[in-house]
Image 1 (cartoon, one colour):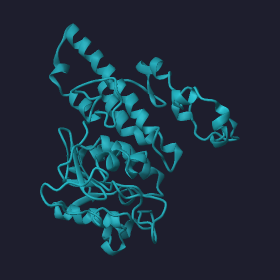
Image 2 (cartoon, helix red, strand yellow):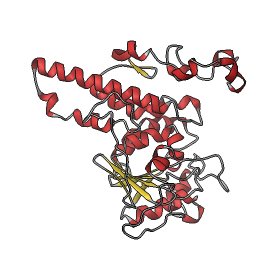
Image 3 (tube, one colour):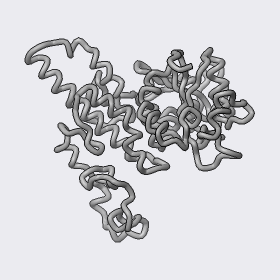
Image 4 (tube, helix red, strand yellow):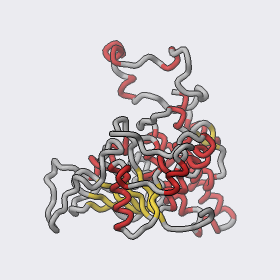
Length: 324
C-alpha cells in the first residue's frame, strides 16, 4: 500500500539481447495483472532464482527494475530512474546475477557447493573475472547499482562473492583484491574499480563538518577535491560501459551525481561539475597509446567519426564527453 515501509532486496542483472519467450516487464497494459500476481512459472531464470533467494533469506519484497518501473510510461520512468540511487542505497541487500548475460542466465543453476577449505584452481573464476570483468561490468546502469549498494552478493558461475563497506569475501575463502584505492578513508591518485561514493556520503555526517573557522574551510576544500577526483573515476568507469539507449548516459549517473551535489552543493554541467570544470575539460575519448600509433594501420577497423554522421549520435555540448 502507498506509504507502507518494509525491508527489501534489489536485483542487479543484465536484460540481455536473447530471452526465451516473451520478456517479463511491466507496461500500462500489464500493470493491473502484475499487481495481483506474477507466477513463478512465468519468470525468467534470473527473476526466479532471485525470488527463491529472497524468500530463503527471510525477506518479503524484491525490487526488479523491469517489473517495478512501467516500461512504456515516460512519466513513471523519469520518476523511478531518478530514484534508482536511493533504491540501491536503501536496499537491505543487492543480489547481483554476475555471471548471467541475459535474464535466462540464472543465478543458482551452476553454483557448486564446496567443502570447507577446498579451493578452485587458479584458472577458475575469481573475483576479477566475475565482478570486474563479468557481464554486469559492461552494462552502464549496473555501475551505480554496484557503487551505491552497501551490501552485495554476487552470484558467479562457480561460487558467490560478498562485498560490503568493510570487506570482500569469496565462498571458497580465496584471495580477494583490495577495493577502494580512491576512497574517502584512504585517498590515492590511482583509478579504482570501486570508487568509494558511499564513503563520501558518510562524510556529510562526519564531525569534520561540524568544525568552525579556517579548519572547516580547509577540510571542506579537501573533501570537495576528493569528491571531484572520485567523480572522474566514476566517469572513467561509466564511459567504458554499454547502454542500450545512448541517451541514458546521464540518467544512469543520476544517483551518484546526487551524492556529489549533496556534499559540494555544486552545479552539474553535462557530466561535469562547475567548480571542477577547468581540469575536467582535459579529457580524451581515446587512450594516449592510440594517439602515438600510425592511424593508417588501424583506420580500416575504426568507426566513422561522430562528426561525419548526418544526425548527432547524442545531444550534448562539444566540450563534454556526453557528445561522443
